[in-house]
Image (cartoon, rainbow, N blue to C red):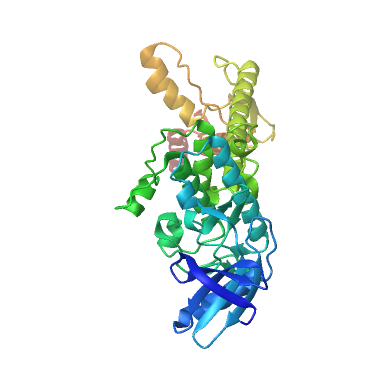
Length: 400
């Protein structure tokens, strides 16, 4: 503490006060926290742990930290300029707004690659130096986690992502939500959603654009999307046409965009396959009609039945019968074709295997009927086998 001299207060935050001071003849900014509050000690340790591993042009350089019985001190470089809250009150050109957002995206890409989520990006925590360089400050609520999923509700409500407000699991995309809100605020100089009913206003997503062009609107919607999966990452946002000044707004950037394109391609492939199948079925039906016309009759087969031997000569007699028609064809001809006196356009065609089985069944039935008829047939009557003549002959023999 002997090398540190604190002069006057230059700013304040929700958990700390910021003073101007000197450290080894170097002008510095000193962040002071009260040690009496237990949670402040945790914030102090977390911020120092993160600041010690950061080195980036768009971040305020961390120098050292001190701890006394009453207070905690974080010593950083002093940046002469103003925060974005004061700067947003003036009319900023589109080029200036684009430069500020681009620098924020560059430093966010650096942080997210280190699995660090800031979780409190707002105009008060963004310094713009006299040289136009943007610096992100206040890492008291930041978190570094390899799991990438967080549950803590923290930050400033107006710049807080909806999943964080609803205490749902969230990822690093909560920082991109804040970037979208800041972009809209710099353009329109107002918040995109209503203060009174913030959640309902976000869910309805009724945002009015009066100054922003289509490219800026598209950038806002892809940063401040209600669905976290539909948001751009910081690295993807740097490739957006609003940042680069070139490219097509319809080009896929986010995973959500690529998934939508993939699903549309799958639907198109299914439609093409369905049309191809219909075309194949149509050509198949046409081919069948060329082979078997509708008005063609089924050829009748002659089946030879072998009758049992009844006479003494054991000669074989053959008879030919026509193929019996199926029950469905007889019903159709009797009840439909006959009354209308015209041929129906419909035709019942049985498969070849079923037709063969039906022919065999009908042949067996006819053979059995012929057999029963031959067994019950009586020989012709004559003088030798007449019962009356036999009776007369017997009477004559008895009289003799």
